[in-house]
Length: 250
Image (cartoon, rainbow, N blue to C red; front, side):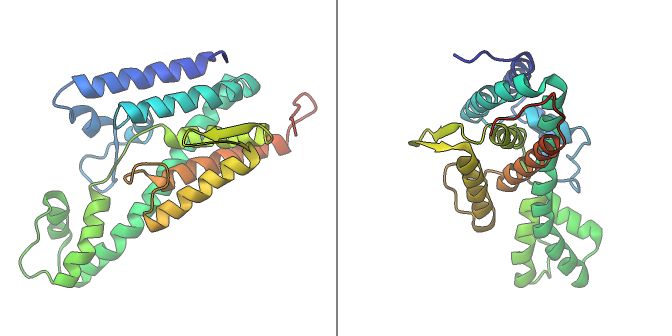
C-alpha cells in the first residue's frame, strides 16, 4: 500500500475537521455561509472563501472520493516535487478553479443584469430580486426568464477540493504519462496521457451541455477544468525548465 505523505495527510485531516464542523456546528448552514465560495456580488461572499471553500464538502461521499483521489495522486506528486511545490500547485489549481467557475457564473449573470438595467430597474431593485427571489410588479415575462439564470448564479455556492485535485491529477499525468489508471465504473486500464485529457474533455462537455457523465448534476464542471489547466501549465513549465538535477520519466 502506498505511503501517505505528510502534506497530503495534513490536508486530509483539515478536510475531515471542516466536514465534521459542517455537520455538527449550528443548523448546518453556518459553515456553508462562512466558508463556502459564494458569488462575489452576494452579501454572503467573504474574501477568505476563495481558499476555505477548498476544504468544504457537500456530503460524505463527496469528501470520501476527493480524499481518496488526494491520497492516490497527491502522495506520489508530493514525493516527487516536495512539499512547497506540491502546495503551490494545489492552491494555485484551487484558485484557478474559482476563476473559471466564476467566469461561467458571470456569463449567466451579466446579460440578465444589464437587461434589467435597460428595462428601467435600479440596482437596488435588482439586488432585492436576487436576494429574495421575488419578482417586482411590472417586470416582463421575457426578463423574468433571463433573471432566472442570473438568480441561479447569484445564489450559487461552491465547495470541494476537486479543483485542487484536478490540478494535482494533471501534474501526475505529466510526470507519469504511461501510468495506467482506471475509473471505478469502467475498470479498464488506460494510460494517464489519455485518461486525464479524456476526463477533462468530459467536464468541458458537461459544463456546456449540462449532461453529467460520472458526477452529480450540480458539479462545478468549469472548476474541474480550471484546476486541471492551471495544474498542467505549472507542471509543464517546471518540466520544460527543469535542470539536470530533476529527472522526468517518459
